[in-house]
Each structure stands twice: as C-alpha cells, then as structure tokens.
Length: 340
Image 1 (cartoon, rainbow, N blue to C red):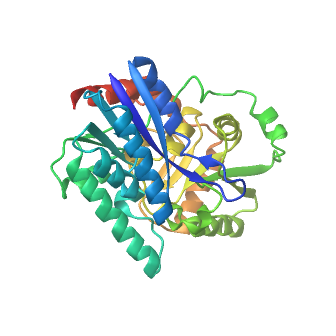
Image 2: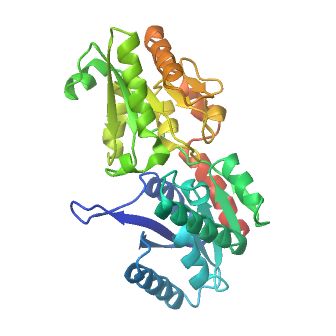
Image 3: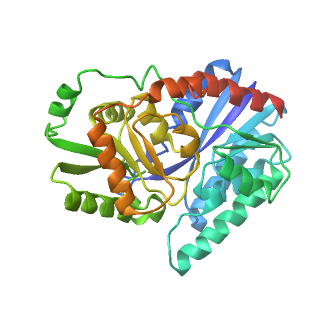
C-alpha cells in the first residue's frame, strides 16, 4: 500500500517552530511499517493568501511527483481549509481518506462576529470535503451524526489509540511528585490545553475549570491546585499523568479526547463534563465521574469524591477491553485505507 500523509501544523509565535497535535505522529508511526511507500506532507494552518498559495504549491508538487502512482491513497488529517485544499488539488487523481477531529465539524466555541464567520466557513469547507472524499474517519459518534446529516460518504468511527508500552504505570509516585516540586499535601488536578494560546480558545472552557477550583477552595480546607498542561512532550505527559491526582475536563465539545485515554492508560482518575465519547470511555471506570451539567459546584463535589476515595482508576484495563491500544487502532485504519 502507498500512502501520502497530509498533516496540519502550526507555528509557535515564540520560536516560529512548527508544531502538530501530539497524537498524530505516533498514529502515523504505527502505520508506516505496514506500507510499501509513504510520504509526509506538512501543511501550515492559516487562511492568509500567502499560506493558501504555499499549501496549494505543496499539494501540486505531491500530485506531479507521484503522477505514476494511481494506487496512492492520500490520508488527510483534518477538515476545514486543510481538507478542502487537499480535495480540491488531489481529488480525482488519488483516493482520499479524510479524518475529522472535532472543531472542524462542531466549531471552535469562540464568540464574536469574526469567530462566528470563521466557524461558519470552517464547517462549510469541512462539509464540502466530506461529500467529495472516498472515505471519512471520525473520532466519535457525535461527529458521525453531524456528518451523516450532510453527506453519504462511507464513514468509520475510529478513536485515536494509546501506546500502552509508552503510557505506562510508574509506581513511585512520591518520587515523581518530588521531581516535579509538588507538595505531598496538594491534590493536583490536571487541565489540558492544546497550546500556549488556548486560554483564548473557548472550546476547552478554561473559565469553568477556574470556577471549579474556586469552589473547591470555598468548600474544603484541603489544598487543591490546577496544573495547566500544554505543549508537553509525551515523556513529560507520562510523568504528569502518573504523579497527578485527577484530570478535569470541561470542554464545550470534543471528538474523542486523547488526554482522557492517556489518563486512563496511567490509571489517573477523571472528572469530566459529558462531551465527545467520554461517557462511553468512562462507563466502567472506578473513581471517575461524568457530569451531565456544566456546573462548577457539581464538578467540585466530584473532585472531592475522587480525593476522598484515595484510589487510582482501572483505566488501563478499560483501554485494553475497549480495543484502544495503538496497534489495534492502526490495523483498523489500515483496513479503511485498503478499502478505498
């Protein structure tokens, strides 16, 4: 099988260094050993005329360079403008499988006229892409329902997998917390932001997380601290997930949040609102809770229940029983790529 991976990246303002969603490369690396040929194309996110012309040029180069590969499958890893340009330039020449992750279908959650227009445009471009590719992969059933109302393209729900050899259980949590300079008396709650500017990306609902912490301070004399994580390496994430006491998720919407599955792999208890597929993932998890409300008092009470239980979750066994190991998910994706 021959596959070209089209990967969205963004540039960090501080160092102009290209970044990508941390789950993408591990997923690709799990597929590569099974391929006869592969190519990686990085498209910078952005709606400027200059960036659009650059992206079109990259895709045309791929098209001409692989003109003799009629069996090449293009695996495009986002909707919005990214998926639209991939479909526009490469559609008709190659088979295209496009993944949709969440905000490309459901919007960003940001407010104001500019964001309202951008969300509308993002959704329009994504639905155009979805109706013209050969196969769609989505991360959760809520995304599947949103797309199936708009198009009849073959669709498969495939959440991202977790590498259990990498996201391991570290027994000496006291040593980890000492290395992280966390006090033994503090109850550490992790809150995940995708990148440094994500406090302005309202989909993660950071204000609600702050309200939860304020409520905890008013109803309990224990020490609670919100540890915000963004732009962390996978090695750092393993340390944080093993050392912390709880993960808090307050997102307005999600697909299948990777941070939840990574926390499960490390048996970290989770408190979350009902978004994406978390109810399905956490259905049999001990000392973890899904709230149907965006209510800071209820979420604070659930965090207290986690603290009082003094117990890790059974998330790692659930990852295995739900078929979410990286190699299992890779085989499912390979079946889709081979089917188009």
